[in-house]
Length: 423
Image (cartoon, helix red, strand yellow):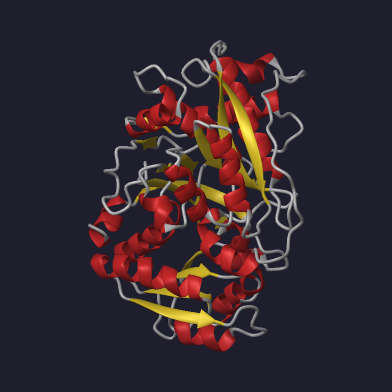
């Protein structure tokens, strides 16, 4: 299974990459399973002391692109593993047994409404997402029923601002803010290269320009026709101002041609600019590894292999989903589910088993450790970003690529840049 594209570029994905026709797949509910056999004691020791949920069952919705032209079933596997772990080691959701109420979003226009209606009809206490194409419909429909929406990314205004939306990673805001912060620190120009589609132009005007202006960073925009056979003229024009940093919002075809063109056309006397791009773009096959050396990739998480959160993740997956690889973006299913459970369980108020109580618990969450976020915490009081109150954290993880592999992870707090641009 090919790893899914990072959600940081989901505005582009919705406009360009996910327009293919999809086949109909029915919604379904799935229940927690017991621990898998074969997990070693050394592995399971990272799970901690057992604390089995004994209360009544509550339904937690799970929306994910699955069963259509674009499908990520591995995210559902990871979300189920996180729920199973919570039911057996965290006391469930404040003592209640968690049962996932899954709905396959097949990438068509009807899926968000269809799935939202299922979650409402089933009286789910909350809904978490793995990967969807249109979070705005989910958020608005569920908010009308007072059901909270859980995400580690957001793309729509509704997801960023709704009182019933809880975003545990600053997502696309952080992608832009990290690049702006880098350019500010290096006192250099930030150039934005993207597909010539409305979604990309909107990202530039809505986020890049305001953040760069407040940070005192000079910036420019270069648009390239999607799947252009030779983007060299546009790349040369973008590099003419000798920018020290580039943000790339590109479709898969341009990911194969634009980065090599950047490396091949650095102006005389200039230095190769640092490129910021999605993981899927940085992993484009058929491109020489040295093209991506030094590339910065925004991430949800930084599994180092040695920290406690990584060991917990590996133990959970080994115990409850032993056949599922933990590489790629599998953790994008695990993380939102576990972040949600931790945030609710942190409330001192006993859960009444209703979506209204869950919303209140989430809103009271303070300094809750985030899964695989290298020490980052979540506080969901609406104060992290004044203009985007749904965000529970201003901290994101960025990784640097060397020879197609991760060389290091960095934890970046983007609150200063975002709040300056959007007070």
